[in-house]
Length: 304
Image 1 (cartoon, one colour):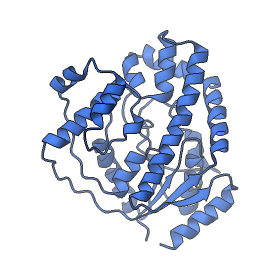
Image 2 (tube, helix red, strand yellow):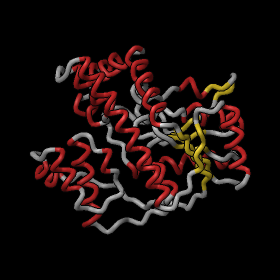
Image 3 (spheres, helix red, strand yellow):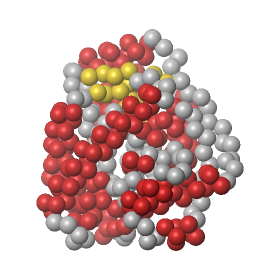
Image 4 (cartoon, rainbow, N blue to C red):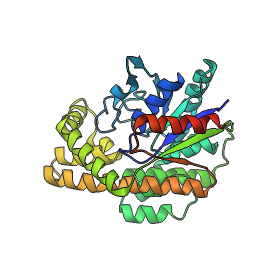
């Protein structure tokens, strides 16, 4: 029996819809591998698309979505812990979990079985970095060997936290926390660059139309610090900057579109890096009809 099925791919490639249809076909449940979808009330900007978990009257159970409050700094150690809880719960029901998402670091931490320990805040180190620019912080981070995705650092806060983690691991003996070796059939949804760019642009405009700005305003009005929202990057970074008056609406929309395109490119770079690091990904053309994609996926799963 396959221990895990992994669905990955860049943003806007249709991962959630495909994973939900596959889960419905197999009678199983989905574990999210998205670094922002665990935050409650951050729905439009993170693309939760919860309606896609309902397939012809059947609700597909999902895990690690809406589990913490906005403003909290959820980390990789916590993700591994929470993944294992969900993974074991699903297996106890005799089902094979589907891991689905685009956060390569989260996915690779599961597939490679990284052993991590929680990293406390280092106020002295933070103070020494407080006046550094983002570019300077990235250069400092490059001096460390770390598991964190350097290319995903788009705010000063993220960069400082990454240096803090790297510095901790360099100076502290790691607490060996067992993480099981999990075999997985890994399916990547492939989409050509132009189609991906078109889908990203269409989805961004749809999200703006559907209330993305209002969602972010609501979070700020509820007491969430704008700096905490900027920390989450992409939609929350640019829309927050618009709301607090740093940029115009058009600047926000245009800069955000560019940033999402760049993010999708970085995701693919990460996935290609995973392949170079020995993880075999079976790529499927996501533009095919759903029934053809499902047939290919099930054939791959049955081979294992």
